[in-house]
Image: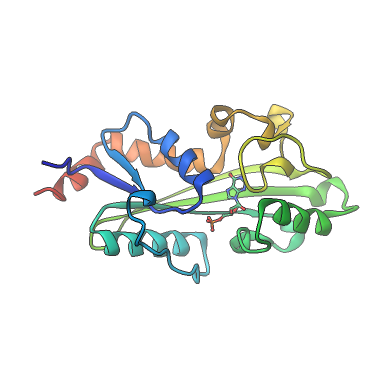
Length: 208
Ligand code: IMP
């Protein structure tokens, strides 16, 4: 008999999927990735908020697989750029190098107050019918560097300076980043909801 408490991570970004799986370690659920479901295609992110896009991804994956799914939508917000790259963080260029170049070009010669930025992450859980069962949000403040620093993490990490560590996210270990990151915060809230036993019951219902 299969364990009814399965959870599918609805992400095709290997950097994100790795961080999410690490943050869910030790939970009483079997975490699986889309690598086990090669036929599933994620929808275009047409929502107008991070929450709407996360719900769209999770619901699509749940409906396609009949599994509980957890999706995150995240991005970097630079208020001095009117919130860009924001919802389009993944789409401003094809590669991480391209995305960083896109950002640094727009940040060139900007004074310190205009270099303030934050990462947002919204995590959504859907049931096998695709109904949203929970939404959690995390946010972390930092500053955009003038040049990339460090080789860890993914995405904009090399240019995101986290003041209290005195390092960029790419210069921090995965554990150090997770302890403060937007994704870490959102997933810790999700973990707390599970620990409060609200969700194991829901997840168990799947096997009934
Ligand atoms: P999406 O959530 O898959 O739509 O993409 C979010 C995009 O925002 C990623 O492709 C990255 O470019 C960026 N991003 C989100 N979270 C992080 C992070 O933790 N570090 C660096 N970049 C991130």
